[in-house]
Length: 175
Image (tube, rainbow, N blue to C red; front, side):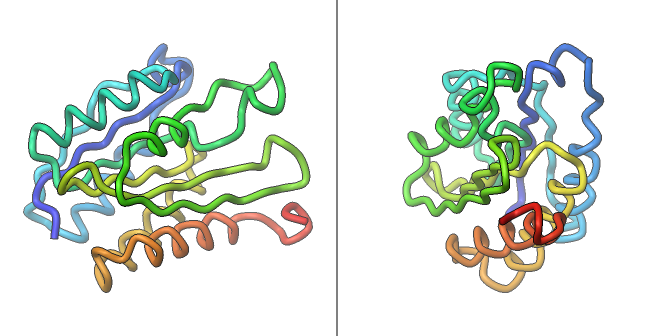
């Protein structure tokens, strides 16, 4: 069980106050349901840059966090269209986490792509959730249900989170 959790929102739009961070309070509620005595800290939002994301996660792990939840940056963004935001969470986590497990969701266009990862930095479990509220909520609820039963099973945690996000969309959107 985790006793100390850190939530790190990502995204220039969150950091600049253009978009309100509604995910952090929901994530806090989910974590408190798992462990009412958990100490939870929400960090200031960080820019969508691999180095900033890696630094934020590494710092939280060095400070003794048992769990780090990264919000946003899980899409394909700029890789598909110059008009979409820059999403670097998944590439930053791929370079940082060991062991790790990941999975991807593909939709009909580049905008509907999502990569979720979970893994460890030392003894700190790190997960990421998509930025859109309903996707983040579904992923966090799946995390909570799975973590409660199998806290070290990265593959099962990742599978449950991916399936929960997929269920937020009609089948026709994913084909």
